[in-house]
Length: 138
Image (cartoon, rainbow, N blue to C red; front, side):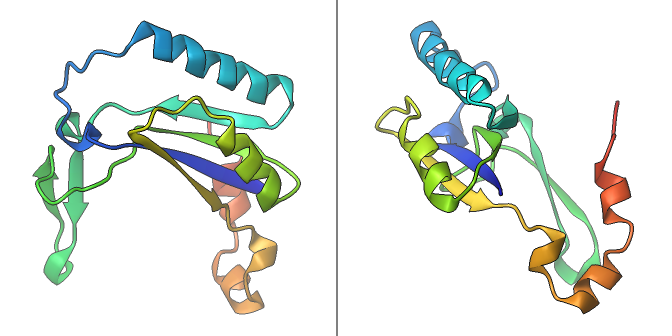
């Protein structure tokens, strides 16, 4: 079962583009990342720049509207993510509880939808999805 663990650092929604990371916190997080890798459960991970460097595309009225960050209405934003492959939701939660997060950070756990989880009609509509997601190199 694949799960995405989403890091939600409270206050990151207002972080400036040149936000400075604490080297000690980065070292602690790297140890955690290495533990995930050594356990054979880590698929991928990445940190994300703050919303002040991002953009959102909304589709009110069916037309795309681009809004540059930061986003005034944002209360929680993503700071990074891990994709892991574990045997159960409980195992994903166990890994999340080991994260060296600070008191202003939340790790949200979301199971990835697999084709087998979907009704046949939806699987037929998504024919070719596997080819889109495999081997997508840059």
